[in-house]
Amino acid sequence: MTKPRVAFFDFASCEGCQIEFTNHGDAVILELLNHLDIVEFREAMTETTNEPIDIAFIEGSFTRESDRVRLQAIRSRAKTVIAYGACAVTGGINALKNHQDDFAEEVYGEAAYMPHLRSGTARPISAAIKVDHEVRGCPVSKEELLLVISNLLHGTTYAVPTFPVCAQCKRRETVCRYEEGDHCMGQVARAGCGAPCPADGIPCEACRGFVDDANLGALEKVLVERAGFSQRRAVAKSRMFTANLRS
Image (tube, rainbow, N blue to C red; front, side, top):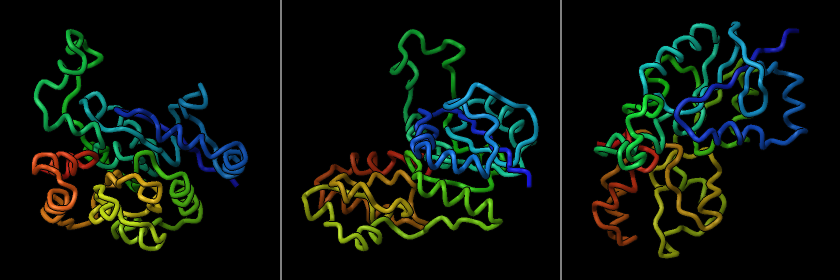
């Protein structure tokens, strides 16, 4: 039986999600190679291909029209496209610049308008091409990525959780960050990660985006009243990984 041909591509990102894939370790990756034919993966190999592929994993946000051309070329030769990581799914942290003026000069100074640094609005990959599946998070969960791959190989679809991170904290019996005098966005953040951050004493930053119909007004109120944030900081905090989902 022919193994599916898989390729990894990156756009505006830190490429941490690709690195997270390599963090599975030799045993898992070697087992995956029994089921997949990885034909392009810049973080782990020098080979590339222009041939048709079965599964394209795309990391990073869409920020330039030249990206659109490249994305369309990938889409035209891939049977299945998976946006993986916060940047690819929602625009991620990159999208914070969509709410700022003169961000280029502030970051790059006099070099801001060099051709290779010019970029526009940071958007999810789905703003340019059809995406078949999404794997959320910053970085993605290694375990969830394996679930998505397993489902694809077995002809089924992985269901992205739609309930909040708070539910997973309760299952783990994790003490709420607000009880520790901290802040958290788990009440509106989309679950699926297993809530490791609050369990380690770190507030949830909603790197997987928000649940459907999230009550952002209530989130801001809690951040102000329970965490002592100013209204401005509460709004800014809720944009950290979800700037494209907020005005």
